Length: 237
Ligand code: GLP
Image (tube, rainbow, N blue to C red; front, side):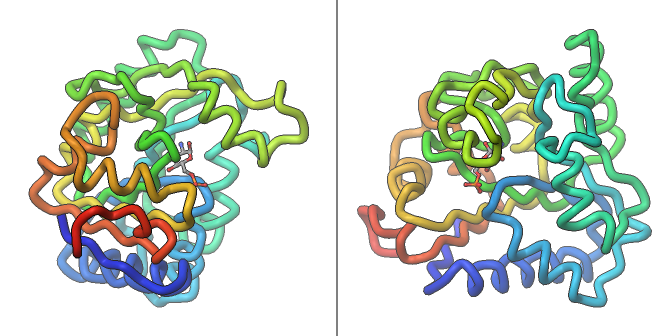
């Protein structure tokens, strides 16, 4: 793992932008994208840049179950608002939160991933070290799946909703195997509430209790953290 410690989230976004720019220049066709507050600075830089994605494909990590793409809390809406409206891709895929048959939706998304192998996958990390919506205890060898969100994740995500009971309880997420299949991965994490998860991911044992720890086995991962998120690191980087 390559670890880059920056002074501010803005500087982190600049580092993540460089990774995207390089991948784009080197011909990356498929970009795995993420939601959450962590990637927003990167998306702003992508929008301002002259990088053209209109001949590239994006696939998103996850989507809430039971939210339509037109719902402002859906990840589809988030992506449109922060990136796709201003920087369109040839094709942009997300799981369909309204799919009635979960196993058919999982199979559909796995087929999309098989047809569009991810060149560069962007990740954030949850405070419990989840990536995508792969919560602690998720098997490492799993592909796209319907996930029951943990109380901790519901608690963390409620800031985006008017009422806690509005926060969806389920989501579709690419699995850990799907994420590990990407040729290159860049993970961004900012703030003190990510510090323990970042330490466990980088220096802890590789265990399904810490979903992000599987990234230690990936040959090409860059982790970009600010000083607060790096504050629990037990080894010098
Ligand atoms: C959500 C998303 C994750 C994201 C995480 C952290 O649970 N499913 O993909 O990494 O939140 O979000 P934030 O960047 O807002 O801290």
